[in-house]
Image (cartoon, rainbow over all chains, first blue to last red; front, side, top):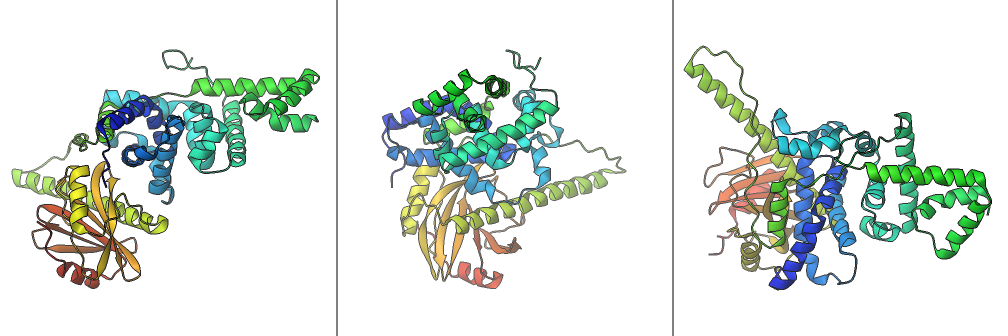
Length: 184
Length: 257
């Protein structure tokens, strides 16, 4: 079985993937809540996507398809594990090592009210909120990515948003994010 | 449309997910109902602030490079160097004491690594049992699978034939950032996972693993056997008792040339 495919076909895949990488990274990190696991999920997802690339139908939503592949990689690798509450803090660099570039990447995910509220959402609700509210996928594409009916997406979305709203309203509302990324 | 019905539909309406007809019904109700209009404003306001408030981190440069290399079909780039460890703050009486302490410190880290690796292998094996083997290549021929691993992983990975077991196929998998090969076998009524890699950073369960030695441990209810062969690390995971797994490995045919 030849996984590599024609060079021109592969080139298309890499370019399309590159465009979505940051979004996929944000999704993987927020779902796994663990740096190493997020990286493993993403690498596994890229391998699977490359393998499945030949059967991808042009004209369908490539972004939604990629999120489906990442979701499946996440489910297959990590969802069945017993969740250890301590793991939530593993998103921090190990051993307090200094790495300013990495700190800059992860800091907003650790300190921001909304990110903290999001992290505490049950996984099913978090996935729906991330895909619809953060990534702007339609209910239909979100349903396909999560492998559930549209009705389930709507119910998870409404409950996830209600939890966020309750928590953030108690905390004083959502601070508007300044253009430079800092909260005002 | 009652106010209750309208409020049920406000979220999909704000998201633009209602059909033209349903959206029309909602809008007609809103035109005549101040309290539902007010609620719609709150829902929309929260949605907009939520969407604007998300951080949008960029993937770290080395992860980005690794993912794009994988997408090009290249072998994975070298792993990011390990993060600096905390400096030792012991007051030591002599150089000999220093050597002893460093040796223990190093070994403790390695043993923690090895335990984690054992769990990682076992978790992946268990995952395969729960979801069924997901194979990228369903060949029954160890030679063909070895060739396929060589092409797709750029590692020299030789897949053995296991006595009394049928090869079902294999795939690449990513464990703790490393791409390793996985060959899946059917043995009696259970499945065996054989992880294969020539990457020295993948830690065997027993760091004293010498040529010809097979190290067997129990982890999470499964038996795990590790040995080195032809410069390659092999880790076999299954439900067999340790003695049975060792016998199976001893009868393994020589790897294909």
